[in-house]
Length: 404
Ligand SMILES: *[C@@H]1O[C@H](CO)[C@@H](O)[C@H](O)[C@H]1NC(C)=O
Ligand SMILES: *[C@@H]1O[C@H](CO)[C@@H](O)[C@H](O)[C@H]1NC(C)=O
Image (cartoon, rainbow, N blue to C red):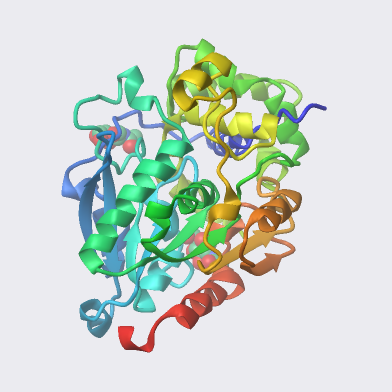
């Protein structure tokens, strides 16, 4: 079969399968762009657990208004004396809520705050926590004219600028999935990497050539990106009837949608299935069709490069026939990197992770978890001991004693 697989498809199918298997799901199509404080991430998920949380708005160079939350410990002392800033960068179809979905002992956002870190929560354009655009509406086609390339070079860059300016400190980045694509792309840029102290990557992805799940490969053969574009859609919102029906129709065929999760993300060892309805209160968040196409290009072409417009527009946009690659080798050798990857992760395939490692000039610290699938890195009920303790040890080893 062709290397014609989808990375997103898996996740979207995962969520759709959840919708489809949940007869009670009512689907709320209310607009993204929550602005009142009662609807904020701080108010909904973080403050109710006793954590101090403040909302910040960051404007990107191309006019998007992103929400950033700053979270600190429940303990009074740590609240005042904040530790090193950490930016949490979520993955595709997710937003900053992804780091707070389980208990305070299980979720990385809470754990880092309790450990005294100055936790900043990123939310990319298009997610329900972000605040839209200075002039475009989310009903405008142009609002959705971006892929992870802009998320890396504009959104992540601007969030780092903001944190760097407020804290006067270089920032630790934690990324998951698409958050690692964004991080690796951004770190190849010298003006961005100078604001970063170190990066910890969960399910690290730059190349997507070896996405392996059979169901993913089958679904990708259906060219979902083109199908969605043909429907005239530019926003990918899996809470919309159109998309739910589309995927439902795909499921009517040979694909057993009740079994999506493990056959798409890889077999997740340690997911709390009884919390599914709660997760669905928050996920999935919208993304753009152009982002889906960019990810499909990576899978088809085996590249880690900018968006491919086709020869003519590439020439006009980039001055060359092919889109410029992101050169992993240009990430400074001096930048400490830490990565955790899983033996059952069908999206961050081990072969692709190895290629990433070969192209980096540094040798990242690695944590391999044989039984972990893609979602476990975020939602495993024992990720705290399996992963987060090690990650925090990595950060601690880099902190200057004087910072406390
Ligand atoms: C959908 O959102 C609207 C507006 O925020 C709200 O009033 C309504 O209760 C929501 N419906 C469901 C089923 O969550
Ligand atoms: C799984 O989720 C349920 C529902 O929220 C919760 O009661 C239970 O404690 C969770 N199990 C574990 C092991 O965290």
